[in-house]
Amino acid sequence: MTQNTHPLLQRAQSQGIHFEMNGAVALVRLSRPAKRNALNDGLIEALRDVFQNLPEEAKSAVVYGEGDHFCAGLDLSELKERDAGQGVHHSRSWHVALDAVQLGRVPVVAALHGAVVGGGLELAMACHLRVAVPAARLGQPEVNLGLIPGYGGTQRLVQLIGKGKATEFLLTGAVIRAEEALALGLANHVVPADNL
Image (cartoon, rainbow, N blue to C red; front, side, top):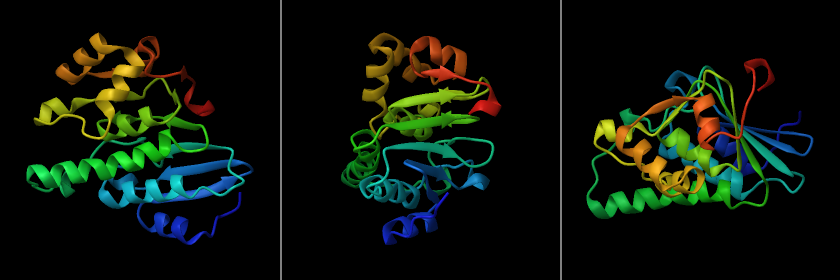
Protein backbone atom coordinates (compact mmCIF):
# COMPACT_ATOMS: atom_id res chain seq x y z
CA MET A 1 0.00 0.00 0.00
CA THR A 2 1.26 3.44 -0.80
CA GLN A 3 0.59 6.57 1.16
CA ASN A 4 -0.85 9.47 -0.85
CA THR A 5 0.95 12.78 -0.36
CA HIS A 6 -1.65 15.15 -1.79
CA PRO A 7 -1.71 18.15 0.63
CA LEU A 8 -5.48 17.98 1.13
CA LEU A 9 -5.27 14.30 1.95
CA GLN A 10 -2.44 14.96 4.42
CA ARG A 11 -4.65 17.54 6.14
CA ALA A 12 -7.51 15.04 6.19
CA GLN A 13 -5.32 12.62 8.13
CA SER A 14 -4.75 15.25 10.82
CA GLN A 15 -8.54 15.55 11.23
CA GLY A 16 -9.39 11.92 11.90
CA ILE A 17 -9.21 10.27 8.47
CA HIS A 18 -6.48 7.85 7.43
CA PHE A 19 -6.18 7.61 3.65
CA GLU A 20 -4.16 5.26 1.49
CA MET A 21 -4.31 3.59 -1.89
CA ASN A 22 -4.26 -0.19 -2.32
CA GLY A 23 -3.88 -0.54 -6.07
CA ALA A 24 -6.90 1.21 -7.56
CA VAL A 25 -8.88 1.11 -4.29
CA ALA A 26 -8.95 4.17 -2.03
CA LEU A 27 -9.05 3.06 1.61
CA VAL A 28 -10.67 5.68 3.82
CA ARG A 29 -10.49 4.85 7.53
CA LEU A 30 -12.31 6.79 10.23
CA SER A 31 -9.57 7.10 12.85
CA ARG A 32 -11.10 8.27 16.12
CA PRO A 33 -11.37 4.91 17.89
CA ALA A 34 -11.35 6.43 21.39
CA LYS A 35 -14.54 8.28 20.37
CA ARG A 36 -16.00 5.22 18.57
CA ASN A 37 -15.21 7.15 15.36
CA ALA A 38 -17.89 9.72 16.20
CA LEU A 39 -18.28 12.47 13.64
CA ASN A 40 -17.25 16.05 14.26
CA ASP A 41 -16.77 19.02 11.97
CA GLY A 42 -13.09 18.26 11.35
CA LEU A 43 -13.72 14.66 10.36
CA ILE A 44 -16.60 15.66 8.07
CA GLU A 45 -14.40 18.31 6.39
CA ALA A 46 -11.73 15.65 5.95
CA LEU A 47 -14.22 13.25 4.32
CA ARG A 48 -15.30 16.01 1.97
CA ASP A 49 -11.69 16.83 1.08
CA VAL A 50 -10.82 13.18 0.43
CA PHE A 51 -13.82 12.44 -1.79
CA GLN A 52 -13.55 15.70 -3.71
CA ASN A 53 -9.84 15.07 -4.35
CA LEU A 54 -9.44 11.34 -4.90
CA PRO A 55 -6.32 10.50 -6.91
CA GLU A 56 -6.95 9.76 -10.57
CA GLU A 57 -5.86 6.15 -10.12
CA ALA A 58 -8.73 5.51 -7.67
CA LYS A 59 -11.44 3.37 -9.30
CA SER A 60 -13.37 2.56 -6.09
CA ALA A 61 -13.27 3.34 -2.38
CA VAL A 62 -13.90 1.58 0.91
CA VAL A 63 -14.92 3.49 4.05
CA TYR A 64 -14.36 1.69 7.34
CA GLY A 65 -13.82 2.43 11.01
CA GLU A 66 -10.77 1.87 13.14
CA GLY A 67 -11.26 -0.15 16.31
CA ASP A 68 -14.49 -1.73 17.49
CA HIS A 69 -16.99 0.46 15.62
CA PHE A 70 -17.70 1.85 12.18
CA CYS A 71 -19.13 5.10 13.54
CA ALA A 72 -21.23 5.86 16.61
CA GLY A 73 -22.76 9.00 15.12
CA LEU A 74 -22.33 12.62 16.11
CA ASP A 75 -19.70 13.46 18.71
CA LEU A 76 -22.13 14.83 21.31
CA SER A 77 -19.28 16.37 23.32
CA GLU A 78 -18.85 18.83 20.45
CA LEU A 79 -22.55 19.57 19.99
CA LYS A 80 -23.04 23.34 20.02
CA GLU A 81 -26.14 25.38 20.58
CA ARG A 82 -27.07 27.13 17.33
CA ASP A 83 -29.88 29.35 16.22
CA ALA A 84 -32.04 28.16 13.31
CA GLY A 85 -29.91 29.86 10.64
CA GLN A 86 -26.66 28.50 12.05
CA GLY A 87 -28.22 25.04 12.31
CA VAL A 88 -29.24 25.07 8.64
CA HIS A 89 -25.78 26.26 7.56
CA HIS A 90 -24.09 23.56 9.66
CA SER A 91 -26.38 20.84 8.31
CA ARG A 92 -25.73 21.94 4.73
CA SER A 93 -21.97 21.74 5.21
CA TRP A 94 -22.35 18.10 6.29
CA HIS A 95 -24.66 17.47 3.32
CA VAL A 96 -21.83 18.61 1.02
CA ALA A 97 -19.48 16.03 2.52
CA LEU A 98 -21.94 13.13 2.29
CA ASP A 99 -22.93 14.18 -1.23
CA ALA A 100 -19.23 14.06 -2.16
CA VAL A 101 -19.27 10.40 -1.09
CA GLN A 102 -22.54 9.50 -2.84
CA LEU A 103 -22.17 11.61 -5.98
CA GLY A 104 -18.42 11.29 -6.48
CA ARG A 105 -16.78 9.62 -9.43
CA VAL A 106 -16.13 6.19 -7.84
CA PRO A 107 -18.37 3.56 -6.24
CA VAL A 108 -17.97 3.48 -2.45
CA VAL A 109 -18.38 0.47 -0.16
CA ALA A 110 -19.01 0.87 3.58
CA ALA A 111 -17.53 -1.94 5.70
CA LEU A 112 -19.76 -2.01 8.80
CA HIS A 113 -18.97 -3.39 12.23
CA GLY A 114 -19.90 -2.47 15.78
CA ALA A 115 -22.02 0.66 16.09
CA VAL A 116 -23.36 2.15 12.83
CA VAL A 117 -25.78 4.65 14.29
CA GLY A 118 -26.96 8.20 13.83
CA GLY A 119 -24.56 10.10 11.61
CA GLY A 120 -22.61 6.86 11.16
CA LEU A 121 -25.60 5.28 9.44
CA GLU A 122 -26.10 8.47 7.43
CA LEU A 123 -22.51 8.12 6.19
CA ALA A 124 -23.03 4.42 5.44
CA MET A 125 -26.20 5.21 3.47
CA ALA A 126 -24.27 7.75 1.38
CA CYS A 127 -22.05 4.86 0.25
CA HIS A 128 -23.23 2.76 -2.69
CA LEU A 129 -22.90 -0.65 -1.00
CA ARG A 130 -23.00 -1.63 2.66
CA VAL A 131 -21.33 -4.84 3.81
CA ALA A 132 -21.81 -5.72 7.48
CA VAL A 133 -20.68 -8.31 9.99
CA PRO A 134 -23.48 -10.14 11.84
CA ALA A 135 -22.91 -8.25 15.11
CA ALA A 136 -23.11 -4.79 13.51
CA ARG A 137 -25.86 -2.60 14.99
CA LEU A 138 -27.55 -0.11 12.66
CA GLY A 139 -29.96 2.61 13.66
CA GLN A 140 -31.13 6.21 13.65
CA PRO A 141 -31.69 6.74 17.39
CA GLU A 142 -31.71 10.55 17.21
CA VAL A 143 -35.35 10.69 18.36
CA ASN A 144 -34.16 9.51 21.79
CA LEU A 145 -32.17 12.75 22.07
CA GLY A 146 -34.94 14.97 20.71
CA LEU A 147 -33.15 15.25 17.35
CA ILE A 148 -33.71 14.09 13.79
CA PRO A 149 -31.13 12.87 11.27
CA GLY A 150 -29.90 16.13 9.79
CA TYR A 151 -27.47 15.16 7.06
CA GLY A 152 -29.62 13.55 4.38
CA GLY A 153 -30.39 10.39 6.32
CA THR A 154 -34.16 10.77 6.21
CA GLN A 155 -34.17 10.91 2.41
CA ARG A 156 -31.59 8.17 1.90
CA LEU A 157 -33.38 5.88 4.36
CA VAL A 158 -36.68 6.23 2.46
CA GLN A 159 -34.89 5.47 -0.82
CA LEU A 160 -33.34 2.31 0.64
CA ILE A 161 -36.16 0.77 2.70
CA GLY A 162 -39.35 2.61 1.71
CA LYS A 163 -41.41 5.28 3.41
CA GLY A 164 -43.35 3.07 5.83
CA LYS A 165 -40.35 1.25 7.31
CA ALA A 166 -38.25 4.43 7.30
CA THR A 167 -40.95 6.27 9.24
CA GLU A 168 -41.10 3.47 11.80
CA PHE A 169 -37.32 3.36 12.05
CA LEU A 170 -37.05 7.12 12.61
CA LEU A 171 -39.94 7.41 15.07
CA THR A 172 -38.92 4.48 17.25
CA GLY A 173 -35.16 5.06 17.23
CA ALA A 174 -34.75 1.31 16.74
CA VAL A 175 -31.27 -0.16 16.46
CA ILE A 176 -31.18 -3.43 14.51
CA ARG A 177 -28.70 -6.21 13.78
CA ALA A 178 -27.14 -6.77 10.38
CA GLU A 179 -29.43 -9.66 9.33
CA GLU A 180 -32.53 -7.49 9.83
CA ALA A 181 -30.82 -4.65 7.97
CA LEU A 182 -30.14 -7.09 5.12
CA ALA A 183 -33.81 -8.15 5.02
CA LEU A 184 -34.90 -4.50 4.91
CA GLY A 185 -32.42 -3.56 2.16
CA LEU A 186 -30.34 -1.36 4.42
CA ALA A 187 -27.35 -3.72 4.09
CA ASN A 188 -26.33 -5.36 0.82
CA HIS A 189 -24.37 -8.27 2.32
CA VAL A 190 -23.66 -9.80 5.72
CA VAL A 191 -20.30 -11.56 5.96
CA PRO A 192 -18.29 -13.22 8.73
CA ALA A 193 -16.14 -10.76 10.65
CA ASP A 194 -12.89 -12.21 9.32
CA ASN A 195 -14.11 -11.65 5.73
CA LEU A 196 -14.97 -7.98 6.17
